[in-house]
Image 1: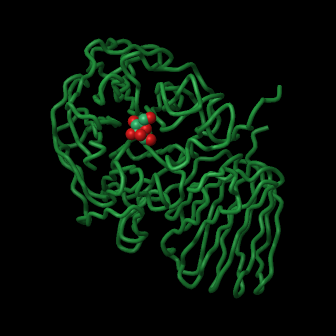
Image 2: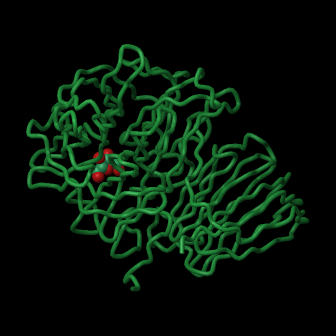
Image 3: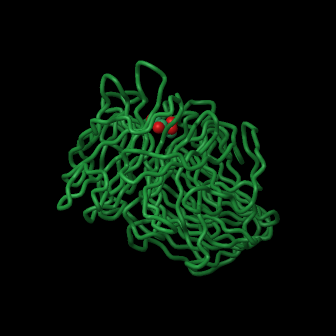
Length: 484
Ligand code: FRU
C-alpha cells in the first residue's frame, strides 16, 4: 500500500505521524535497541510532550510502538534516559524481574517548574508506569532538565550518576544515588565554552584514546540552542576526567558568548545544522558508544515540509576518541546496512575544469578519497535541488552549501557550513550517506562531519568537479543501501 504524504526515510527513524524531537532513553535491552523520543501524539508541532517508542535489531530499520509515557493534565514528559536496573536497586521490579527505569523531566504545566521523575517497565519496555513518589529530584528550578543516568563502576562505585542541566544558567549538574529515588548533589560544570544559548541534553561517558583502554578520557556532551557552530542548535563536547564526583576538563575553556561560535578552539560534535540533542545508548559494553541525535534545528524545525510526520533521527554513530594534533578528538562513524556495490571507479585524475558524473541509488553510501591542491567540489543533485560539498585543498577546509535545496521557505534554512582544516592537508576522505530528506557527511576519518536536512527529490546524481587545479580521485565507490 502506498503511503499518503511525504515518503519517509529508509535507513533513518521517522514516526508514522506527528511531531518528534530529541531521542530519549536510548538503551540496549533484550537483544533490541530501544529508541524513545520526544513526541506529540496529537499533532505536528511541539506540544503534549510524551515519550514515543521504537525498537531495532540493527540501528537502521525501526519498528514503531505505542506511546510509552504519555503526557498528563499535570505534566509534559521531557527528555531523559533509561537504565536497566539489573540489581533492582530501585525496588521497582523484583530480583527475578528487574525493571527498566526511565528518568525523565516532568515539565509541569501549571507553573514553570521542571524536576526529575521516574517511570518503570517490568515487561521489557512495552508498558510503563509512573513511580508514585515523583518527582525524585526537584531544585525548584524552571530550567532543570534532561537527566542522563549511568552506572559509575570505577573508584568507590558502583552507584548511579545523573548529569542534567540548569539550562538557562549554562550549567551541567551532577548527582549520585544508590536507588534512583534519592539523589545527592555532587558538583557542577560551567558556564564554559559555548554559552550563546541554553544548555540541553548533556551526556558523560568514558572512551579509550586511540583504542588504548589505559588512555581513557571522559567526554562531556552539551547541546546548546542557539549558539551552535553552524547557527541555531548545535552540540559541543569537552574532553576531561571524571573522578566519580567532578568533571575536570583537560584544558580550561574560555567562555564564549557570541550568537554564532567560532570554528577553531572549541570542539563540536558536528559542523552541520541538523544534529541536535544527541545522546548515547546505555546497556552496551563500557567502551561501545553509540549516539543518535534529532536531525533538525530549533531555528526552523516547525517549518520542515513533511506530512503527516515531522522530525527524524540521524543515523546511529559509533563514537571514538582519536588523538589528532595533540588533542583527543571525538570521531563518529555511521552504523549502516552492508548494501550492494552500485558503482566503483578505477583511480583517475580530473584535470582543471573536468567533471565526472555518477548516478545514485535512492538510498546511497558514497565513499571517496581525493587529493586536491586547489579546489574540488562534489555536488549531489536531485529533481528538487542540490547540495554542494567544496574542498579547498589550500586551506584544508570543507564547506557544505545547501542554498540550492531551499524547500523550506524559511529565512534561517539556507546555509553554508564550514568545518576546520583537515588533519591530512590536501587529502580528503569522506563517507556520504544519502537518504530521503537528508545528507550526512563523515569526513577526515569521521572527525569533520556535517549532518544536514536536504530534500533533494528523485533521480539523484553525483558530480565531482575539479573547480581549480587538478583532482586525483584515488577512490570512489557507491553502495545501494536500500533494504528491498
Ligand atoms: C531539546 C529540548 C530539551 C527538552 C525537550 C523538550 O531539544 O528543549 O531540553 O527536554 O527538548 O521537548
